[in-house]
Image (cartoon, rainbow, N blue to C red; front, top):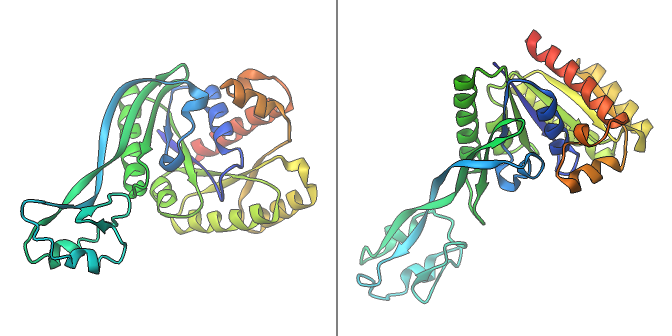
Length: 287
């Protein structure tokens, strides 16, 4: 079993569109959407949910009105202004627990939050593990870890050859949780100055965790000079450029229809994505 994580330095590079197409092309695989803060792979794969479970994480303060003497100390000392009229605003509460320690009446307790949901779904392309983090909830790295654990369990049960993960953007905690222990990372990059900078940061994270990386330049023809700069940098870092995908409105059309672009059109974009999967699967199987 080989695990591929598709990453990008920022959102909007076309990462999920490429993952959806890889899901359509690959055989014997499980998909995982590790971008739990803004999951959207399900919009392309049209899943039917067969299992849903709650995700509990983090804590918020709760005031017992029967014990509370309304001394106002918690309200005065809460630096997040989360307590008003002796009630806790769960969205403002950072879960630090300070109020529960200083309450003279011991009227405040810390209770775990129901922070989101984890789903196991069936799609026409195979099983999909995805999640939804609640509004203003944290610990997305922990939820990403649960998504990956469940996808590995499913892949083992199904005898799958690949796990294809749609990773979160950036280089923060969710990315670290998505990347650690993976066999390979595919970085989707746009040929812009910010795209080059973000790519350099993500390559650094991959190197830190000893995860081999390859680069896919999306919309390479909107700035071919920057594309050459990306290729030059990758060559200096011994990172393979696995594909150069041209700009085409057909990608947006496929996205609006909720269909992976390789199934929507047989044009240049689809042909390049097919070549990308051939190269990536070859690299994965050589690791």
